[in-house]
Length: 261
Length: 244
Image (cartoon, rainbow over all chains, first blue to last red; front, side, top):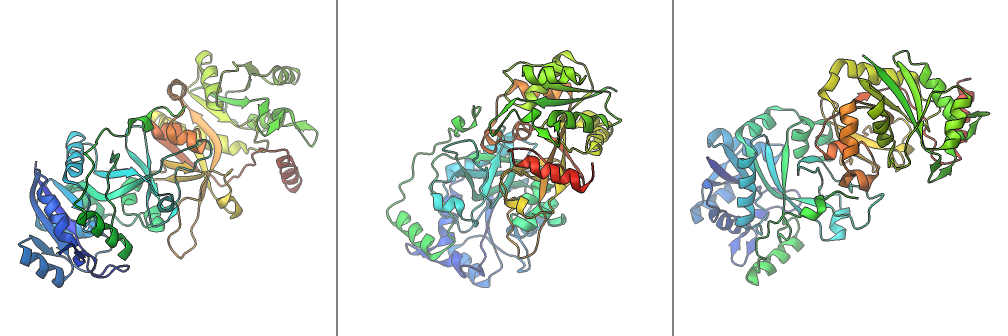
């Protein structure tokens, strides 16, 4: 089984330009992602995909494999799709360049799942929200997951609406996906979905076209995407403190999936 | 092919005691629902299913076919499942007992969809584009999300989809007429409430949560659900406007 890791790193992020090269304890953010990716034994190769000459230069200094992609892609998935036309593989693990705190063991879990479940077009990582302010924020994406751990819907609205249940848990996705080559091809040749366009959530293109997406739930992942300078400070603190990773815990939160009543 | 309509009727709704027998312009709601349902030519039979003696007696006195069901049924769909155990049919249509102005054409839409897709789907249900924007934010109105085949992805009392664009978008609401096969009713009743179903308090989500496909059929025809006593006035106004 041939798996390639692609780390999309966009320099011209509208909210945080130059983000992938921001310094964390003496190294650029993408360095941390690349180092962690190297620990995953399944990868045949690891590539950083970027539209920026600047990032290409930095990658070459570190001897990282890098691919310069077009600047006209509408979505990150389209960027990976371009990579997949140049680098052949069965699966592409997409690891967002602004997720420096994901652990390699979490990635391995994801890869195991898609290899086990061939009917899935994609597998994603998710975890429960822990910060209430984060849940109500429309920049975060909430997931509706069925009993078989398949994704049914994803929204910026506060789903599932809790009319009847106390202490309900909300789920957020983590910036890592694994997709087959067919899925990437399908994604890039399929027009934007109606709901995808309204919500601005790429994954909806797969769901609207009745593709199956499997969710791997992590219990105590410390990861978060670096979207703001404040997030960057937090990431620096964690990494500086010597990352105190919790033991990898994959006992997926089974009690949440018991019958509700 | 045999198609049966069933009107589940509970006497004690949490927000409206004795709802099915509430008078609307002098006629009990349950009779109005029955009269509307009878206008569909595609139904072979139509029954009221209730656990309440008053409703049962009223139906007998009006010569409305009625079946007494157990008090254990947690949802209207469970009541249908109980009926389906003794009454054979290819398709069971759930006609809500609290929708006194249901348009019989909505029943026909479900029947015709079933005739086309048969057992490819476990359940059939309707949706309508929302015209009245106050309904979008109301949590008594259920908004639905469908894929490109009009299969149900999710249903919520929230305003979904969330509009991140600057343009005007449309929302779809659920219209509560359902079609089930015997197999799907048994499937429904053998499972307990699922997580999203329970949180949102939306029965049809049980199928989605269990990984089964529900076909949603577009309709232009609205209905009015009577949830609280003041909804009776809404229905009476509707009847006046259409001179029914």
